[in-house]
Image (cartoon, each protein chain N blue to C red):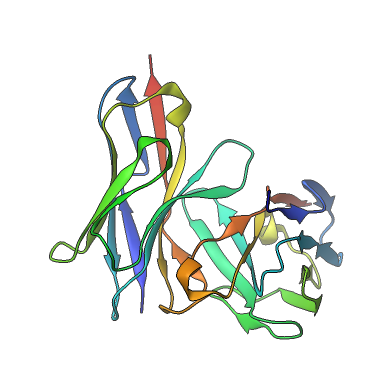
Length: 115
Length: 115
C-alpha cells in the first residue's frame, strides 16, 4: 500500500517555539502538499512542492516555511509558533502523471496545540 | 480562480435513506472535481473524481456524483445510507487543471447516520 507518514500525531508547544512537522512518502511522488484543517473552514493550502528544493506558496503561507531536501520528505516549519497556529496539519502527496491529477494521498494528520 | 461551495455543514439521514451532499463550483477553466471522505482521526481518502470524461462518476462504497455544467454542480449521492458512511465529506477542485496541482477544498459536510 502507498503511504504518507507524518511523524507526530499530537504535539504541544509553547508560544515562540520553533516547530518542525515532518512528512515522508514512500510512493516516489513528485508533488507534496501541506494543508491545515480547522472546523468550519475545511482544508486550506499552506505550501506545496513540485520537486526537490522547489516550493510554492499556497493560500495561507504567512508564519510558515517548508523544506524539501529529498524527494520523499517535505517538512513544515513554524519559525515562531503562535496560538492561532493551533490546528490539524495534513500532509499529502501525488504523482506528477496527468492521468492521476488531483488524486492526493494523505497522512493521518498532526494535531498541534500551541499554548 | 477556482472555488467550491458545499451547501450544508451538517446532514443527518436515517440508515437506508438517500444521501445527498451538495457541492457547487466556480472555475474559469474546465475543472477537475473531486470528493474526499475523512473518517474520525484519519486523513482524507479519495471517493471519486471527475476529469471531463463521463459526467456520472462512480466511486467507492456505492457513492456517485454527477457533473452538471449548466448548474455548476457536482453533488454526491448514495441510494442507501449505511452507519459506516458517517464521516466528513469534502468537495474539491483543482487550482489549475494540470498534473499534480494543488486542490482547493470546500469547508466540508459532516454526515450523520442514525439507526
